[in-house]
Image (cartoon, rainbow, N blue to C red; front, side, top):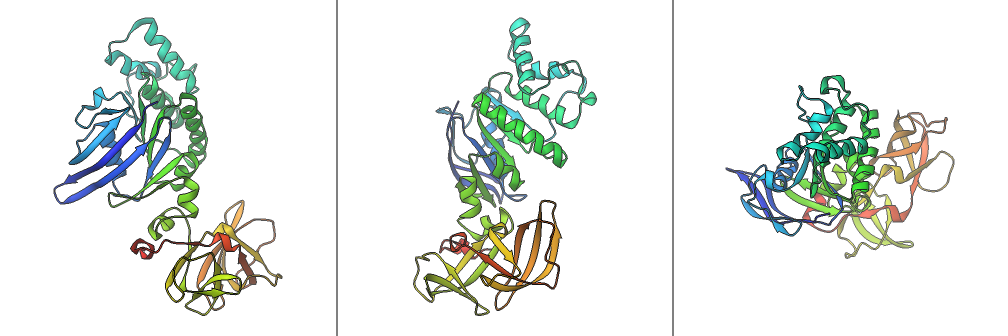
Amino acid sequence: MSAITLDGVSKHYAAVRAVEGVDLEVKPGEFVTILGPSGSGKSTLLNLIAGLTDPSAGRIWIGGRDVTWLPSAKRNVGLVFQSYALFPNMSAAANVGFPLAARGMRGAEAAARVEEALRLVRMTGLERRRPSQLSGGQQQRVALARAIVFKPDILLLDEPLAALDRKLREEVRVELLHLQRALGITTILVTHDQEEALSLSDRVVVLEAGRVRQVGRPDDAYLRPDSRFVAEFLGTANFLEGTVQPGSDGWAIRLAGGLVVPCGDPRRPPGTRACGLLRPERTRLDAGSPDGFEAQVTEAIYLGQSVRYHLRLAGGPDMIAVAPDQGKRHEPGASVRVSWRTADVWLLPDNPETQRG
């Protein structure tokens, strides 16, 4: 298990700043996901760690060794790309064994390594098949086996599940997590899929325009983001914007329409602006309850296990609520009461990023 350290790493292409001043510490054995919108610098950052491109500034360490200018072939890094990059004329076993042959390892030791790697990814019995004879999920497993067969110091994954359909992606996602835990290998995954990032990672790194906007545990980044950008990127968000005032039991935000929403200690003076984040699944809907706020359903979207309701609050903003599907739904036009716990309203930090978006 090797640590990864980035110190002020930047990559510029003429006037384009693809990555700018990234500082990051990845602990040995940790699974970290880098995510962000298209063009945020995710793949560029991964390529810098892999040694596929040189930085414009900064230093990179892997396992305590400065690898900033070391060629990719000398970094002992396992790589899996979205395309898998398998050799079409080689069997699965030959594809997996290729990195060993490139390192001069052949014979019984190489065969044993290949057999073990294929066993770890559940490909035993399919060793002789060529990529064209394998499904997308099986090809992905071969690519993973090839990346781990030579026992790399770290594993780098560039959107390896993007080409799979949703059901298969969810299945392979679990297998990938089990494999990473079994090997204990330090892993960095690049993805634009928020669900993938939140479900796999020990920590997530959110990028915007080449800069790190937040690093933290998935639940912290989702429920307690540092900025409006992170809040919006990591899922559907309701923003309760207004001014801080003392409430009947603590503090509250007075919204533009006059609605007063309880909140935790805003840590800012009364009368100042505040923006509260409320995730849709943290709400409760009830047609007959006296609690909460009056609202009208404008749209009800069936999602299988749940229903997403678009609501118009009386004296407040439009918002979204997600509730389990229990057979009886609130139809468009219905009057409901929507409520939530005060603790579920997260006040975005009082900084310029809070008001982005």
